[in-house]
Length: 493
Image (cartoon, rainbow, N blue to C red):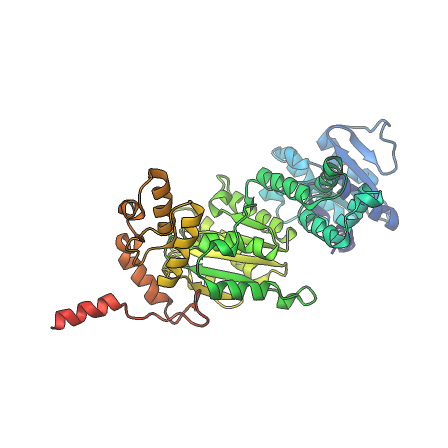
């Protein structure tokens, strides 16, 4: 539903306190003005620079008071017996620290029920004082959709040779999703200046800058592919098959994502980062620690804004690493006044109810630190366990890193029993860095199977029968390690 449709409904229902959350004030004001003209409603706007102005008044005319308190009181003079009157206060959140202004707003909103006058605050953030919380309804001014972005692009690229072929044009619009109208116009113009035509890479560059300014999520632009990961064949096939289904016609068929559980160093993060490149989607990285703010309600607001950005950038991959650490305190009292639990609740609701084409990849090293409801059906398409690589997978990983670090492939491979892919990479990197043979470099690597063997065994036992296997189709089943069997037989003898 558009801004004008929601605003029209609320005015007709006589909600006299309205808060429009928007970063594009000019576009929001244009939509409100168009609605008021079509409905023959009276409209006045106020900002600290130009003061109070009536709709249709020239920009250079004497606009009256710059006093915010006087502007609020002037709304009563706009009342008419037959039609509503709206007063739009631009960036008015800056003035709500004044008790006098808050009291004047409360009085005006209450009187608006009788004289059909409406206070509309237009602001990029929602900071409603406690005294006014029950009197305001918040409306979100949505980011432009694909159709509007296409109109903006065609309005800027007016020459035929400036527009790419239809398939490339679709990729340009995909890259532009999530940008405001102002940001999209600038990115399209920059692409024309730089290349003489619209190109998706310029849009991605601008989008990356936009995400950096938010400080909440980042855009991963690496070149990783599945060829850089040894093993995980079943997980790769499952995700590719799910994401390549055309579910746009029926949102119910859109894939939801996977939760990856494994010991550290087994390729969870590498898989998530390469999945976007394999499917032609941007990969957004969510660091939950970046959402935490010092002010009351700031963390929850950051989570809402983050999920809104993610939905606007669909189709995409959203990668959240080590969830149990970012959501520490959900299962118990961590002394954060319930902030982690509220953020977790927002994430759970979004995972369950979202309709946007966002494939969520979450990773976890310790499932016991996450509440059981997190992994229930319909939040993820699969909960997958990635075990330590077996012998054939380790050989593939050795071959890959020996070639990457330009090492002699004929040299002897050290004893790599229960090594992770990260440890094999570390051995090859140290061999190249220190100019050592692999066996000597291996003396500098202490595998996690030795330092955290008990935790890995516990993780395997939990995953057995509960998770899908990343390497073979079907449920992961914990087998008895041969070395332990031999040890028991020896003890019996």
